[in-house]
Amino acid sequence: MVSWHLIGTFPNRNCLVRRSSGLSLRISSFSEELVNIAEHPYLPFEKYSGCGNDFILVEKNGLGISDEWGIDGSQSAPLLCNRREGIGADGLLLLTYEHMCREKGILWDASLTIFNPDGSSPAMCGNGLRCAAHLLHRRLQREDGHYCVKTAAAIHHLLVEGGDVEVTMPCQGKIIHYPNPLEFIFLESTSANDVPTDVGPSPLYFVDTGVPHAVLLVDERDSFSVEIWGRRLRHDPLFAPEGANVNFCYKIEQTSRENAKTQLSVRTYERGVEGETAACGTGSAAAALVAAYHWGLSSPVHVRTRWGDWLTYTFSLDETAEGVQARDLSMKGTVKALFSGLYPLDLLPRLLGSAPSSKEKIDDHITHFSR
Image (cartoon, rainbow, N blue to C red; front, side, top):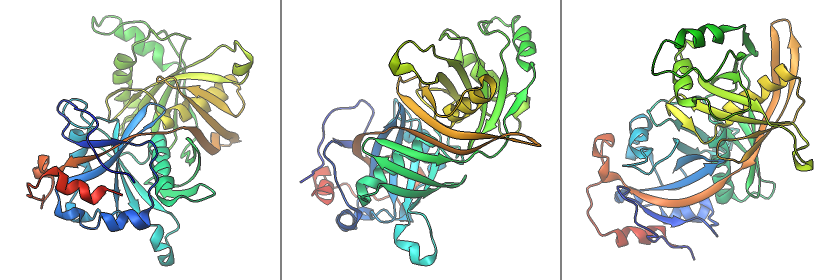
């Protein structure tokens, strides 16, 4: 028996939540209990973390949440992801179940649409995909733990093994090396009082791992200003018109038997978030590929995120006439289900064309979410 209940008071967070531990729900039974959700002004959501990268997951189709809600992710994400007045997250994920449509030729279990806190929608998100796969596994409970999820970038194969989730990732272009562009940028910046000169000339690369990433190889230190340099380079003309996420990468010294494999530390300034995040799966992937090329590292490469968790990347690098191309890229790391919640949609009336106006007590709504 799992029931929804208030487990704490969250300033400016008007949502009902319950802890995720011990949760085991199947779509077949859960969808019947939520069939009348459109009559009530509360939207079920799941809060997840993938190595510190946190997300709000909203499920559609198969859990009784229909498109009649008119959920506009581009407008909802800035409010829901707000850490002071919303739920708080690095992104909003809309997971649409399609596993029941295989007879129509659909070869994936669900599609995933990602929205950044500024309302933009990237083609994919590595850690977001892994969180979505973990939720899929909670719902479908497949013995082999294999799932397929479609994003705007590709169809991804995912494997869930306990708290670890592995995902295949696209690599849509060659590794591009910009010869010595950063020396000019940094020297030019020394006259600006608001820009520190704490990073010297550094190798700069670009690689698309589903979304565009710039990678700087820097000294082993955490003193450089990720926020300032990331903001400058994120809009650099080199990466126009889309801009790029910016990753600062350095090698970690091997000091013990446990650290006998190649390891990197990566910090990422994410576009759409417009700030540093605790982790970035596609950014760490780009850093792993660039480090392998620049320093001659071999797969697998282990990356420590700003949060302190580890991501492991396997891949191959092929020399082509057009340059170095990455292939067979996959990422593996931990995923945590943090809590579940009900968000009152009447707080977002301008986003929903037909938002419910019911003012029934919350206890009346909780009954639809009890098992």
